[in-house]
Image 1 (cartoon, one colour):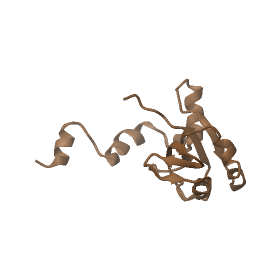
Image 2: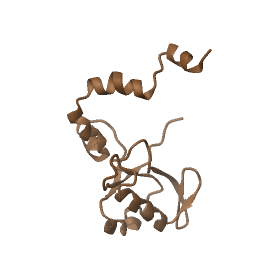
Image 3: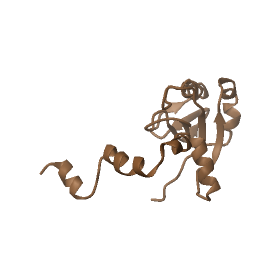
Image 4: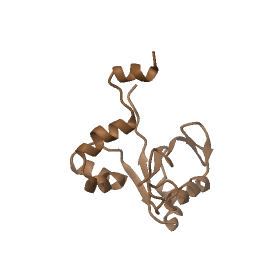
Length: 146
């Protein structure tokens, strides 16, 4: 039997169908900017009493990236992501430190300069929804309960 048919019979639908049947029907287009910007979404969630990861910092300009060492002081588990990113692109998940290096969740080690370069890419709009300049969010990494 076709695996897609089996999934369908179990009630599992694809992303395009989900968007067409549920997202677009129940969410006015005028509200999209509220959720397209992760900083705005975070503020709305907090105002509604919904738990969200702690915001460590926001970098809006390259000159602010020079403060990265200060912003990350004492942080070992954190995530850097574009505020207006799409599809998870541009997200870096950090899970520790080794000396001056920060460990990505895949084990790779990055220097502050490497992280600063990635943030510059985020600011340039490399990962944003429409290729427009963006902001870099730094949040605590969510730890899931096994």
